[in-house]
Length: 481
Image 1: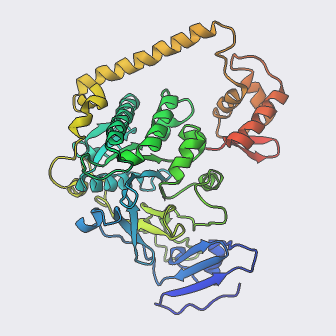
Image 2: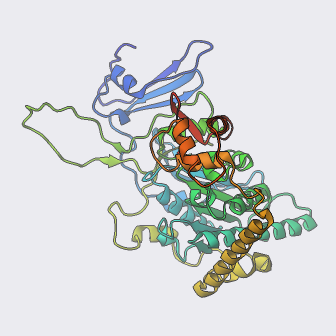
């Protein structure tokens, strides 16, 4: 590709099309070079759709500075959408909280690596839900640290795995109760406030609940699937916020993945392995190539050792909140969320975030469903009572484990499968391992001794079926982290 002359100070838009039978593929760095943009690659934004592409060159990074939201942005429009930010071209970026055309609550999936802006995105959505009188049930599995300002601003804020399970059980029971009431009325869709409020269940750091080895993984996966299956028509939405999109990190459920990818999918900054898994799991269509989001909007500078004018100024723009709305009609249009909260870290609660929630009490669950929600909902604001219920849940699981051990009776029924033992072996190191090294680790775990052929068969299953393991080279294997 020849170098294209870009007029200084102007916005230039190029419409490109690949030859018949081909799709657009590009290297962003090479494209910037061809366009003569060497100072800041964030000035060049690419949108692709199969064989077509739009390349936009800006005089400066169009998303470097974002304002806070206005009160109008936070209120649902006639389509049930809020404005979460803006696209690179200045158009508003919408996210749907409720589909008023079909009467359906929404499923949502927010993905982003550490530091990508996930917590601020969650805070903004929770604040919008409060302002729209949506009942928010929020599980913060970072011990409450992800969104501390949400305390007292949502109907239920759970901060431990046990409390999140109790919260999910209550939400499923409310969904079943609403289903029975609506069936008696002959209703097959949800109407906000007639008579019940819209409800949202959100699990932040969902990997901690649903990853392999998590104590309540099976039940957590089941309850989330139940909400995804039955919640839409009774006004209960479900959202997972996670650092990874890999199926094994989210309960290992194809059904769960299928439900989430048909909802609102927000992709913040990602890792290279995450992008491959998005395509493999069907959350991103083959041939769709979003421009990578760097950790910082900071061009690389080459400096001669003889240059005496060395500027070590560390003033640069981070990319928190920059994302793609994969479920929108423009999934490769780069956008950025509004600036949420103070720019500099604070020693306590952020007053700007608290102001977003606005005055007054949050919306509460309808009284008709209190009995269905059960003792856990009644104890949600009583730490002592909640601690008793969480301990009862731990005791319940301990009894189940004892019963399972007694049932297996040492007959082999409770022995771990070879694929699970292989995953445990790979999890002991960040470095790729050979099949022989994995075999040694597996045979040291105290289980039944196996041969290298058995390990290779297990690796084949984990690569081709589960996708939990990647080939890192010839006879080298690593976890798909």
